[in-house]
Length: 325
Image (cartoon, rainbow, N blue to C red):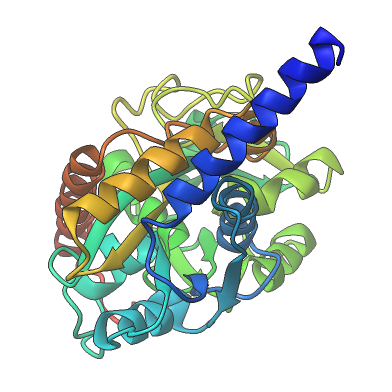
C-alpha cells in the first residue's frame, strides 16, 4: 500500500469513530432546530447553514422545522411550554423573541431568561437606515434636519410593532430629539414596496433584507446600526460614526435548549457550533449577510442575552412602546 493511501485510510478510520463517539453523547432520536419564521428569511437561512454543518459533524440529520407567527414568539412560547421526550430539539432564539417582544406584548407569558437554556450566539447583523433611491438624503444629519423641519410628519416603516426596525426608530427619535410616525407592516417585503414607492420615508431595515434592494439601486443605504462596520459592508458608515455615539441596534440569533437541559450537553453543543462558525465557508457566507461576532461560551451568551433584555427594556420604557404603538 502506498504511503499516501495509508495516511488517507488512517485519517478516515480515526475520523469516523470520533464522529460516532461524539454523536453518541447526544440524546437518541431526531435532532431538530425550531425556527419561528417562514423558510427563506434570515433566521431560517442561518439555522440551515449551521444545521447542515452539524449534520456533517454528528453523522445525524439535523432538521430545521419552521413554526412562524408573532415575530417568532409563537415558536418560542411553544418551545418553552413543551417537554420534548424524544431526541433533541433546539430553538433559534432572536432579539425579538428573547429581548423585545416579552416586554411589550401581554399575551407572551414565557420568561426569556428563565425558560430556556442558553447554548451559543450564532451572530448579530446590523440594520441599515434606508430610504427610496428617489430621495437624495445621504447622511443621518440630513434625515434629522428633515424630521425637525417636519415634526410628526416623517414616517418610519417597520416589519411590525415591537420589531427591531420599530425599536431602532424609537432609539433614533430619542437620540435626535425628533418626532416621527411609525408605520408597521407584516414583514420587510410589503414595507420595502411602500418605501421604494414613496408611501413612507425611511426604515431601519435588516441588513439581510435590505441588501438586495440597495444593490439593485432601489433603496439608498444611509447608515448601519452597529458600532463597528460589518466586514461585508465596509462602504456603509455607522450611526456612531455619523454622530450618534454608542448607537447599537442589531438583530441577533442564537441557539437555546429546554430549560432543563444539562450543562454538559449545552457545552457539548456549544463546542461543536463554535467549530462550525470557524469554518471558512461558513464565515464567508455569514459575512455576505453581515453576520458577525458569533461563538463564545455558554456563559458569554447567557450574559449577552441578559444585557440585551435590559437594554431593549429601557428603550421600550423610555419610548413608551405598547402593543398599539
